[in-house]
Image (cartoon, rainbow, N blue to C red; front, side, top):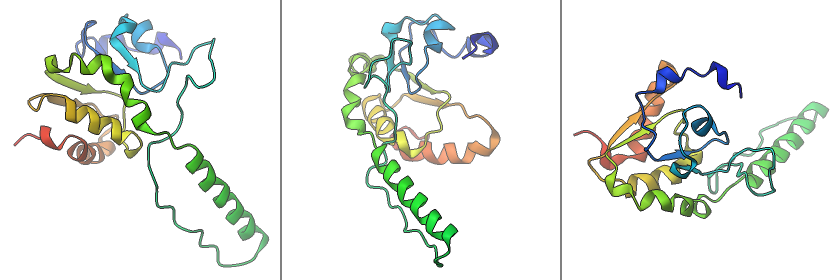
Length: 176
């Protein structure tokens, strides 16, 4: 990551150095660019670093028991047989990449101890896709009901998708 190209001024009003952070990515951008104390950050899936040890980085998805349709190749041509093999291999990889979110939720304990002070949740740089839904459901359950949820999206094409995801993930925080 080139930290020189990150526009710090754009985000300077979004958060304070004393805020608590849950990072879903593997970078130390919060510490390095924004000078956030690492004790205020939970790196939910680990932190990429030069002295990496096996098991420190959690890669995968939290989609439990996904419904994966069968491959619908109709012919016995070589290309169709090849495509069927690739499809089956990818299905296996998808299943192998499952990460059980319940094993990682306890990492949020330092935040849960202070969550009663929470007045605002800001979601920045996350698609709110279903792969991390269990984490967001947990967060929604522990934050006070009057907590404001601010979600930043990348482009207008994402707006409706993000809005729908937020309704599912934070139902008790919807404005009446």
